[in-house]
Length: 199
Image 1: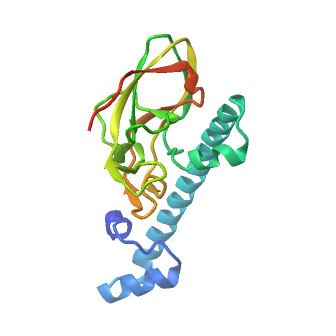
Image 2 (image 1 turned 30 degrees about the vertical axis):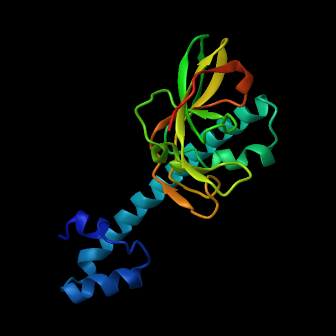
């Protein structure tokens, strides 16, 4: 019987004709691969259904979070693209004095997303390590600014999704790998800058 891995390691999860074109030249008969094809496609559809449910649930939670902070869908949909909805998404309330980190262009505006740890690189947070100084053509490395919460605040905790960063340096789109934990809040006034970063 054909090993499952042989099928799953290919990129031809399509229809029966495509499967036949792949397996027949290797000497397999339809009786060998059709049962595996049916089983694999069934498993694949179940996984798609599971991810659709997870994405819908996490997407609803995320949307409700942004709405609770006064944002309209047109304002937060771009931020939603940076969330990996296949990973856990939940709200978390932190106390006053919690330290968070954020990559920014020197002198740039405080963003909405923070890292709960300094041990990450920009690409893991879904952003370009470079940025363009506002209203200039100057491109510089981003720095890490250290923030601290000034009172109890609720954030959206998630995992950064792989994303094409087209905003940091518009002339140099950057494929960010994502994968790092991140915390999001639009209540910038509840975080004070305690340690400005340096180039």
